[in-house]
Length: 140
Image (cartoon, helix red, strand yellow):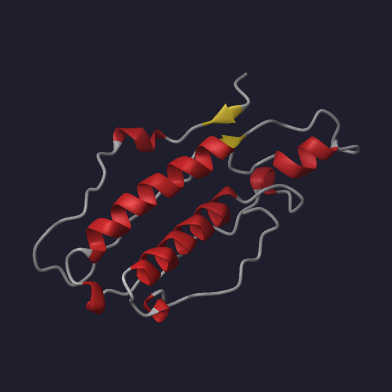
């Protein structure tokens, strides 16, 4: 069994942001590659399992960052001062176990960091990310 699962986001042409006069744009972004292994022994997790199970791999993080940068750049090229962002992610844990990763939350955090960086680079107000909150996971 493959120990990493990659979403099918490479099938999406980026950026797929429409041009023109749109009022609301909803983008659903699937997480990137993540560690989908099951624990060898549920009662005695290894430090590697505790650290990595259900979390994005470095490749997954890089891909989410790249896709986000393209999308955010395309969005902010159109009407930057009038654009607000809001992020929503699934609250589920890998295998429904709280000690494992939350790939959706990690993805949202990367996107949020990318939005804030893009706003800052353009001298725009960071409050355009409407639900800014402190980072809560223990993984970047």
